[in-house]
Length: 151
Image (cartoon, rainbow, N blue to C red; front, side):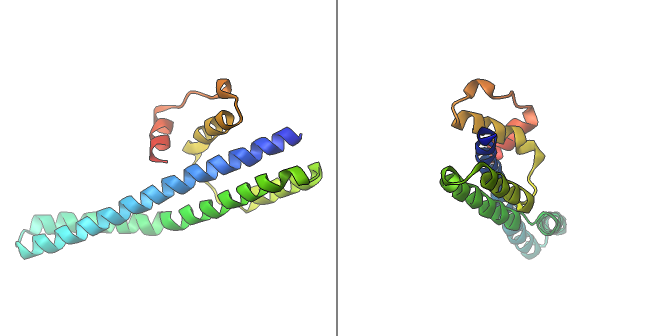
């Protein structure tokens, strides 16, 4: 039972790390597109190129909508905080009883943010590698490999 809790602590760390990084990268990408799109729209307007103004405006609108909908920066921060909780629990786990450890794990799981499902097996593989069970890693789908590269 205690080994299961230790696994869950490690998995929680890796899952939240992957999500933190994925959301951070998405936030940077959306901000970059908005910056470039805004500059392109201004330049296109000065050059009197209405097609480029419209295209840049659409790119800005889509990125702004995605930013508002997803709130990638906020989610990255939530996963960073949860990751820190897992790190803190890992540090004090040896001093806790089995019941205290179970309670602590359950509290973090209940209060933590939802993550991207595509990163579950990515986090699982990172966890089994970290605990020395490389042979237990699962094969990732193409989507999972892309998500792993982003994270």
